[in-house]
Image 1 (cartoon, one colour):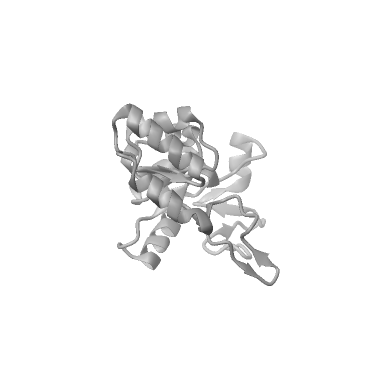
Image 2: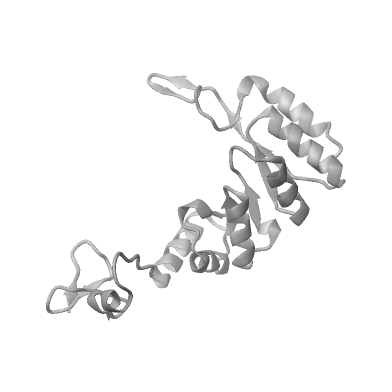
Length: 191
């Protein structure tokens, strides 16, 4: 066997066929057909650990489910100590199926329905990210209805303009000029 060009840690057999974790790719294709995605658990774990080592234990790490919502991938990242950044209620449900606790997940999508907010609040998700004054109002109304505290992250758009770079048209976050109003609304909400 020889090293596969450009693929650190992977080998080729004498015919030039890629070998992944000791298995020839042509054997994998014969068994599963094509197209095919091959996920290497040891590589995923190695990258999770490298990420954790880089940022240290003081930083809470989250895996963005939208990157790959495969239940086995979610199980691996949970075992490696990551929490979840969920972009939909569907991703929250996948997190629950992968044995994450609600407090290990956040909801960060841009457009949340009243049902989305109600569901994640009811199960006790770690936090909901608000991207508008209206979302803070909806979160506050749901919290009051449920008589339950909801941790809310207020995402801020700094409205930066530097040369050709600008966040002014960015759909993420409350424009900085409205942030005092947003904070007052959140702080003055009983839950």
